[in-house]
Image (tube, rainbow, N blue to C red; front, side):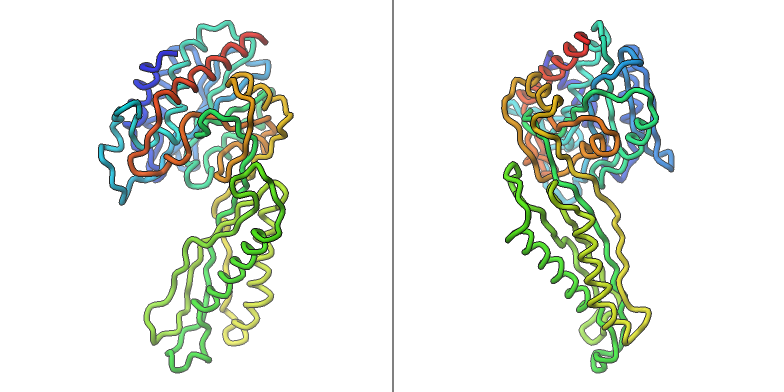
Length: 387
């Protein structure tokens, strides 16, 4: 596949500011404009507001199972980052292509678009589906609606390849994640009367200590999976805030925390343990002073883990198409668990670029990575012609 054609598509895609807070409809319009003249069947799966949409694009026969190439259209913000070039204007230097989303993951989308004419020309015995979602970066939000739509379709795809950055290695697993917001309700009094109040900051700190205790237990003696760089489940507090002044007992505090679980652990069970501590050990002390005091838990984002068996057919296929022998697991999350667990589609993660470059200022991807991905997608197309 001509790398210049890939780069041309990448330049077009990077120019769209698809930060998750924005609508992705302009980039969906653009992608449809590339695919529609080639004969792709296009279906949008919108969000509740109509301001965002997933795109499901299919070429080839509709009555047999085929292959899914999956990616997300949104990117993380550039706010506060020191970029050396315009993040929304692709810049090439020494074989590297710089721009927001160049690595995560518009490079993969660009490869798919560059390969689309070959897909349209091929004598496909099995269909190829392009699944492009919204709001992956804020908790794999959009793909849920797309997966729900796939569950209604009469034919389930044979395999799904999620093109997150893996340097074209075959990834068979990633951790499941739950993101939780906790509101702590206290009872405010003057600090000289502290025992008559309920200090929300202090009780928040006690819950944070419990979260850390869970994390320490998992690190010291929890289940292990050596294919991960961090081979155990983790718990992490990202935000703790509350209070207004030293001489005021705070009546409100907030905690943002997460758990990331390997396949041997249930992330919901870990959350249940943490919430049970709040309900059973902390709230009675708080409510003895003020019955309205306590904790509110909101699991506001998350995704299931991916745990595809290394001997599964989709893994063997991905290795053959990519010319690779090894497989691995990664700590970061993707939409692959949704396709695998909820839609029942055998799934692996394989895509161009290095996750270390994702979300950074001066995000980049090597042209050689795009070329390697182009060869892989070309092999997917050839596989689809074999039936």
